[in-house]
Every structure is written in structure tokens, then in C-alpha cells.
Amino acid sequence: MARSIALVFLLTGCLFPMSRADIEAAQAQHVYRMCQDQNYAYETGYNAGLKRMRLDTTWVDTSCAPEARTRIREHYHAGYDSGIANAPLVVPSTRTTTYTFVESCTFSSDCGEGRSCRSNQCMGNGYAGDPCWFSSDCVSGSCDHSGKVCK
Image 1 (cartoon, one colour):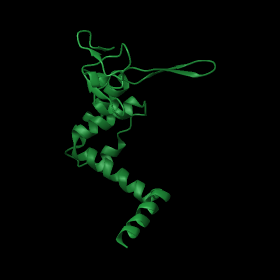
Image 2 (spheres, helix red, strand yellow; image 1 turned 45 degrees about the vertical axis):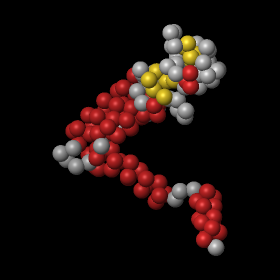
Image 3 (cartoon, helix red, strand yellow; image 1 turned 135 degrees about the horizontal axis):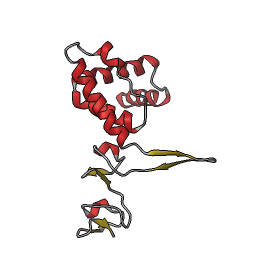
Image 4 (cartoon, one colour; image 1 turned 180 degrees about the vertical axis):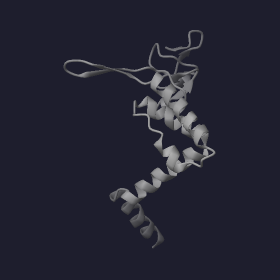
């Protein structure tokens, strides 16, 4: 009986997306965390810059304690500046838009699933010629440690 009740709750969560109130609560918790943790504010700013989002720190004035506002805004802005510096370049053309991807990173979360950030380079799931430190960084399972590239 308990299993069937748990299954109903699980299926209900899968079938019905988050309500507007749930989304607003998650956003409020995200902003609260940024106000409490300057490193989290930096990382959030970095990710916003990496996505080339518009720089907006109005949330600091409405959500953070007065004594923390300057510090949190500075950390968010510093992260944004670093992120925008590493953002992919967008080159418009007549038919399509071309993206050039920069493999640099600051955090492992910048590299995607199954990859790690080492020496400001994304590593993992690499093919021949891609950078590696360990054999596990290569699809082939073989890293040339003298040249630090996948075989």
C-alpha cells in the first residue's frame, strides 16, 4: 500500500510541472543564497556572463541586507566579467549563425556532464588530440602523458 501511494506521488510530480508559486519560491531561494554566499553570487554571475545574459544586479538592492549589498554586487559583477570573457563568440552570417567554442573554464560545471575543469581547460570525453591529464579523460582510454593529449 505504501509503495502504491509513493508511486502516485512520484507520477504526479512527473506529470504536472512546477506551479508558478513553486518557480517563484525556487527563484527566491536562489536569490537568498546569493545574498548569503559571495562565492555563489560569483558563480551565478559567471554563468550569466557565459550565457551572454544582460547584467542585472537590481535584485541586490531588494533582497540583500544593506551591509552585504556592496560585497555581493562586486562578487556577482566580477563573476559576470569573467564569464563574458569566456563566452562563445557569436558570428552572424547571411544564412546561419556560427558559434566558435572556447574550451576554457573556471568551474567543472562550465564543462558539462562527465567533464572536469583542470588548468582552465575542459577535459573528459576527449578524442585524439584533445587535452588530457588522465587516460579516463579520453574516449579511447589512452592519454599520451608526455604531450598531455588523447591518443
